[in-house]
Amino acid sequence: MSNVNIKRVKSADIEFKDRLVAVNRVTKVTKGGRTFSFSAIVVVGDEKGIVGFGLGKAKEVSAAIAKGIDDAKKNLIRVPVLNGTIPHPQEGKYSGSLVFMKPAAPGTGVIAGGAMRAVLETVGVKNVLAKSKGSSNPHSVVKATIKALSQLRDPYTVAQVRGIGLEQVFNG
Figure 1 (cartoon, rainbow, N blue to C red):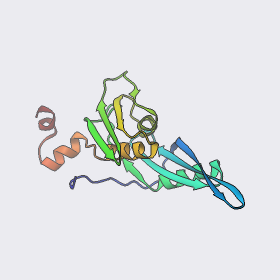
Figure 2: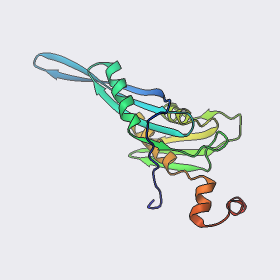
Figure 3: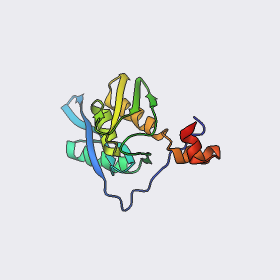
């Protein structure tokens, strides 16, 4: 885990698409009555390998979503996407959620559940097999998916780290 470096990205001059993953209504009961507030988890990305997630909390749903989008733009990472899929199988764990992703052949599509599907489609992956195990809490699943995506390495990076040629990476 020590050799894993998360590649942060600046959000200037990039056209982002956002996906709402989940909205949660929170009720606070006081002597004066009930007070409702909302929390929204949002994923943003450019569908070309950049993705980020954010959590927004506000008294209204639209304000919570807007805050989530702003928060997501501050936490962007770059993910290697090769030929519309991920370069190698990868697991990610956050809290009680465990996610597993595996590259798929062209035409397979995104085989993944709700929160994972939002992240994978936003990053620009077109073909992947994915499974979520353990907790299905959207917050944990999104964080586990982002963690797994941040640990992916493309063949060029592997060749550079090992100090060998690119053809040696593919041939073993």
